[in-house]
Image 1 (spheres, rainbow, N blue to C red):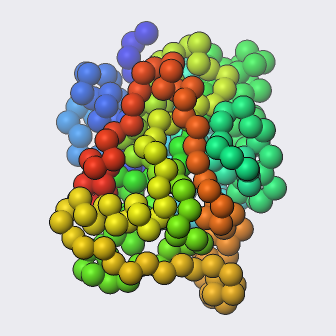
Image 2 (image 1 turned 30 degrees about the vertical axis):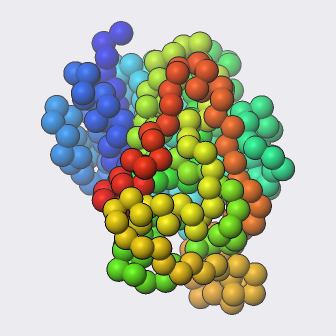
Length: 307
């Protein structure tokens, strides 16, 4: 082991992975299309189109772990952006011999009854869930066939914490709520929902990547006890001394009326099941294997309010 790591993506998860590894003195390179600087001391940066399989393979040469922390910027274009990216990651991991560590999500499960555990089948029928399920299935198969030294996917629920911004259902309404404005959130706002701190995603991803016995399967990120969207927002505001705001919901006929005019809302409408029933993560397996506990909720809230 040379303790060399290639991280693709400088979003909130990629930055947290880089910071975690830099703190222990690892050799880290973060690559993005723009060469974006994370501002983390000791981290190298490079400009790279990660969908270029040859270029990514050259960049990954000699790396112990290849971290997929990519997040295609246009949520409505996943079907165009992800397949070449996913293929390039697989080719680069196979060529370089690096462990392939994937930042995943819960979309592959589709609608479920009860808490989500890693033993559930990837049974989604919506196009985003099917896409994400295929990405992991291809990586797992390559690992099982012996083409990859290691492959693991870490799945989290909706992100909170610094840098999440518009990619988080709570964080996207925080700036206006801090100014006392009414918040509108997707679906029902009174149901139990798991929220995951991006720092905990990074900790779990690194732990899984460096544990050969954990490879070939998915793991859920240790997260705080579920609470409703409305309560989560109220807690974020309270953490920095602000009063609660009125919270409205976008669902049913109102959601249908907005969808024709917003490509993003049309995409989210297909996933509205996540906000129309309890959406709870079972993270017991990761807690037991690595002893990881989630960041205390009060700290998560402060980090979300003041990124």
